Length: 87
Image 1 (cartoon, helix red, strand yellow):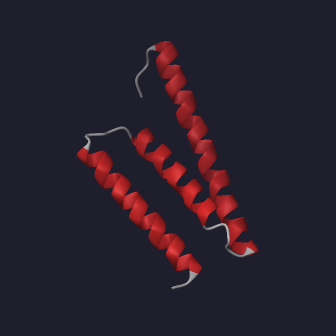
Image 2 (spheres, rainbow, N blue to C red; image 1 turned 90 degrees about the vertical axis):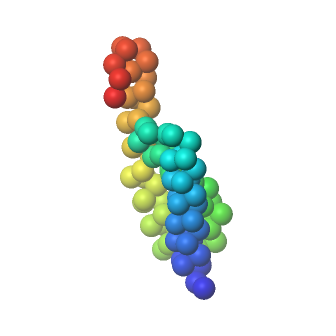
C-alpha cells in the first residue's frame, strides 16, 4: 500500500470513528465536528510528513483553506458568548 493510500485510509478511519463517537454522544453542533476533523487532519499530516515535497505542498494548501474556517467558527462562538446570539 502506498503512503498516499495509507494517509487517505487513516483519515477515513479516524473521521468515521469520530463521527460515530460524536453521534453516539449526542453531539449536534457542526462546529464541533469541523474542529475535531481539522485537528485530526493536522495530526495525520504531521504523522505522514514523510511524503514527498509535492504531497507536502498539497497538504499545506489544504490546511491553509481549512484553518480560516476555524477562525470563522471562533468568531461565531465569541460573538454568541458576548452577544447572547446562538448560531
